[in-house]
Image (cartoon, rainbow, N blue to C red; front, side, top):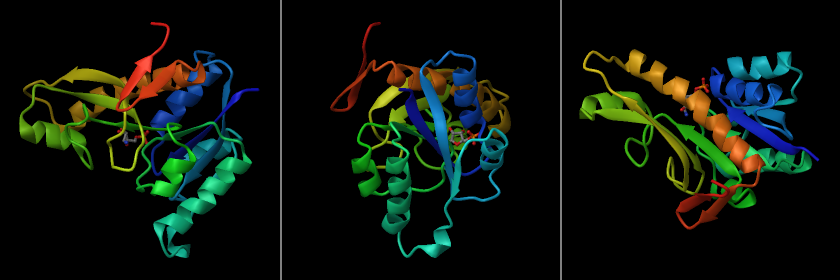
Length: 204
Ligand code: GRF
């Protein structure tokens, strides 16, 4: 039985494509993306999932009174599809505690900074403005706080003097496309052990 993955996204979907590509090229074995969820009907990532014949779910936030009732519909669908792993990939909604609890240590996120530095929006801009010499990206399990849970993988990107937000974001994105599939592969191979805030990688 293949590990069932759902991807939640709101935009471009390049990380979704990187994970999908890793599965198709068999870098990740024994897994499939069986659902893509978006709160944005025009998200290029959602359109791409459709083209690839992956089941999609569009969630219109305006139809729900609160975050929890919105999330409960998603949770129900994920459970119905027997989803093992949820990958947030540029998903611009905060997920509620009921979602985190329903998929404890089974929700991953990618963030374009070396957490715990620069959580939240415009992480690359924050790093440039702060004058740090290195930036990067982080894949982590999701907990009740934004950009906060146990860290699975990180990659460092050196900041150059002439970097702009665009040039830095581009180099970080290349690393995102490398470490997100790597983290998913480790999950699929059952090699991630969460102990408090630490994630041990088994068999290294
Ligand atoms: C990425 O930079 C990711 O780190 C952040 O949102 C962006 C999503 O990009 N969470 P994409 O939609 O995967 O291309």
